[in-house]
Image (cartoon, rainbow, N blue to C red; front, side, top):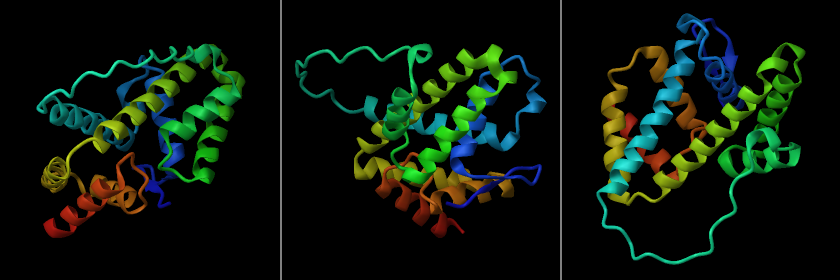
Length: 199
């Protein structure tokens, strides 16, 4: 997987990037300047994907309702053990390799085990679980889009891509080529093709 370069010159793999997003969001009182602009941009990109998927699905007629047994309520983050977190990562970040998911879990465990983070442990854990569920939701919504909707989303993405600063363009293209974003495989290919046509 290709790493991402931040403005400070550090190289970040996708799992570490996700974990850093969690840490940034867990401390809303921190000065805005403390958040790396690239991290916040990638979070905004994920948010836009979710919103686009919701908008596309909202325009479709609702399918006939099917009565199913209610799913069990998810366990509260503070009550999740190592096995629960591993299952959550496997489910939410299934587009990552097993080694990358292990790296993500190791990074989370390190953050939670750091004595300096003890006062914020519950906040970090809750934020991580929230991000993981958002990633899973985004992937599910994007997977449900029709081929036409996916193509339209890819074209809109390419138009917006041309307005980005070079460093952000590089970050996104790296992650698309590495298939490190929570995108269905066909949508990832469409976005790469749209970028190639736009250049």
